[in-house]
Image (cartoon, rainbow, N blue to C red; front, side, top):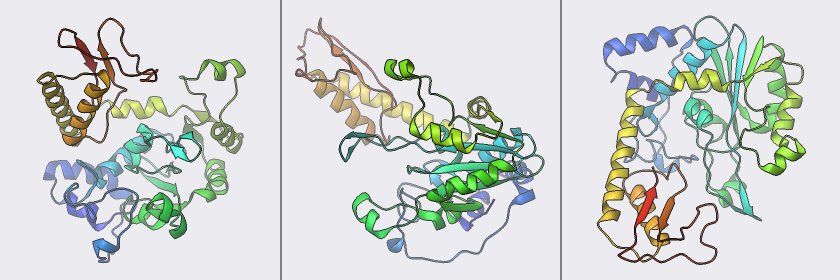
Length: 329
């Protein structure tokens, strides 16, 4: 694992008894790296960082409330659960398109995000255990910087940032994945991943034809000669215990939820659609990125089902009608 100045600055602010525990876990393979000074105006990343958005993130944080050190600790704890020479592979979510080049709002894969804090699509993280305890090599495959593409799609973090910001030991372009993953898998005693399994939430049609997605088929081919085990049970066992940063974020989200619903209850709305939009706005105004669930807003005898949307026009609400709203940020 590589350490940046950002990681060590945060480490100095951690209580000594906690820092000693973290250092004992990470020290066998932690290395300091020299850092250079670059003007924030010249930094281009695919997500907010302290250097570009100091009003959103504190020094040392990769995402609000969660530091680079905490993400590194998560990876080390997962590596400690792997057998010697074991490998864990987890991929970022894919960008989904609703029509032509019009895409849906991107939502990162929760397990990939938990281990990396990386918010971009088209990325794969590989944790390769190299010794006892939590010793490992963190590989991160990402989209390389491309000025022409970024002009239209927005900035991406790139390979160098994968090392300097997200602390990857080995960072490569995503198109190098087939070659490099084959090498990594060939020296692995066992590979843990959920990328070759069919998702539980398949549509009726997918279940009928029984075919994997293109991505699942590609990973299955790459790992055809490797013993694979599900990663999710190992990873979710670690996620059961929440850190102080996670608890603080959960409390903030809960407060934002309460304020949003309280504000909605103090107002009147003529349509379900207006009510749902108001609460969605209140969540984001309260500091949340988005809602955790699809909104369920109901009023009157005939209610709107979220999956159907408002195709036939939003039902109207009257003062005498009741509404229910089940939504969390």
